Length: 122
Image 1: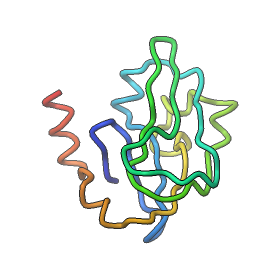
Image 2 (image 1 turned 30 degrees about the horizontal axis):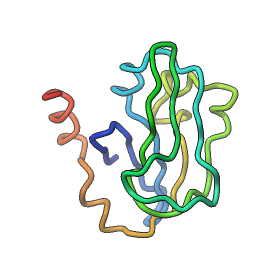
Image 3 (image 1 turned 180 degrees about the vertical axis):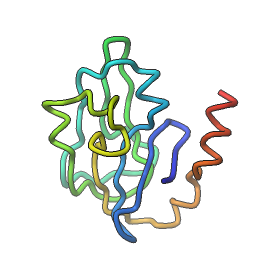
């Protein structure tokens, strides 16, 4: 997995497809998620731009794209079960899949050790 400073994670489905979600750290900070605003399939996205939002009983938080590309799939299961972001953030709680257009952007993301250091210093 790769991570952003905004607490999104990214896993490569293959060499050019990224599965994106929010980290367990972020979902714990948000509390019980009650709604997820998903991006639209076919939308072109730029790394660092807002692609959706997560709302919880405590607050709301934007979701940012970790890479540039095109949204090719969204997790429609989150419409009925937004709490999957809390219970399974790295499995069934994923948010979308992005066809990556600029692979070199992956180098700017943190690995697991770097992310653990980042959240420890926050």
